[in-house]
Image (cartoon, rainbow, N blue to C red; front, side, top):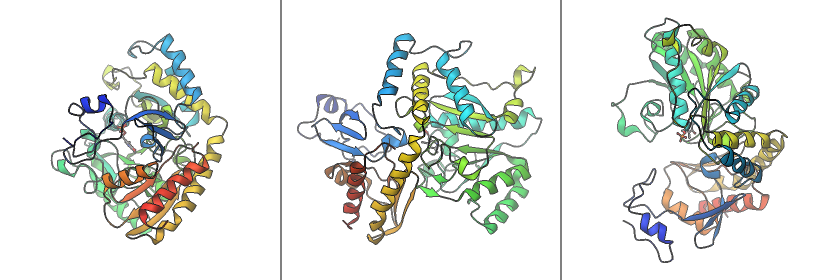
Length: 425
Ligand SMILES: *Cc1c(COP(=O)(O)O)cnc(C)c1O
């Protein structure tokens, strides 16, 4: 157990041997930073230091922390009804939210199934796709086609559609059912290769699953909207469903409200989570098109989707999501994303000259410095914290995904911290 340092709060020292931390070899990792409060774009640590948050807490807190409009909605909802089960009961926050999401999503993505985490929403989307085929009387379509560089969650089924080599789950290779993993069709020859693969294997594939416009946790790897139009064409040609995992990209992160809007096409199912509640409570959704939904609409009880998480459509989380959507209504977010994008592109550009840097890129409110080898995550987190920034690299990339509302001076602090650590400041 790494020894806590002097001045750490009691709860940190006392709980350290009981908490199992995420994504971390606890024996050798540095101790986590104790946070006692958040506000706007900043975290306050137990020793009183403030850090500018470069990640918006894993891409969730898009409006910044403690937004008063979301806080008010939560206070009202907690007094009225923190939670009720969703089986056989209905409540306004969920019904209003479902109708609003259906209205905001393009096309006929109108049928909203709620869950509590991103991984579970992807599991539900996968289950919908499998049962869609079964309900139509199509047998043998039991696999998914997913892409190298992809990330769709940490549960057992979602691990199988993550990148098989680079992902966090190569340890379990061989344990889980094998899916079909391909390269994204980035050009005409890529399209021909995927078309050929589907000609051979489409009879065993229920759906294609992809993160539209940018693969997030797999390394912040962008692709052109044309790739998505190609996938739509190939899915239609070979009779497989197309699932967009917009858990990272949804709610403005890439510059349009949903990444699919940059390509002008719609998937058959879309998954949403991360920024859905503006970074306040866990909530996710798998949203199906009319055609998918209609395959379940039947006199046959067995054709129903048998799923229902205990905390499904939690009223507090739905109230937070409704309040977050209110904040998207006036379009200020788009101006802010463009402002953040320009600041990240400009502030990170000098990193191109840094040692080991192979690429610097910005897409929407995402800024990326990519290296030729994996970076020392714990050590870099420590250096960034000394510079007043909360930045946690991932694999071979140092990236920034700040709140859209982050003030210019805080964006400058973030990019300067990256320039300093890259050695170009
Ligand atoms: C984060 C993420 C998930 C998993 O969401 P959890 O809430 O962590 O389960 C799935 N897909 C994408 C694209 C993500 O970014």
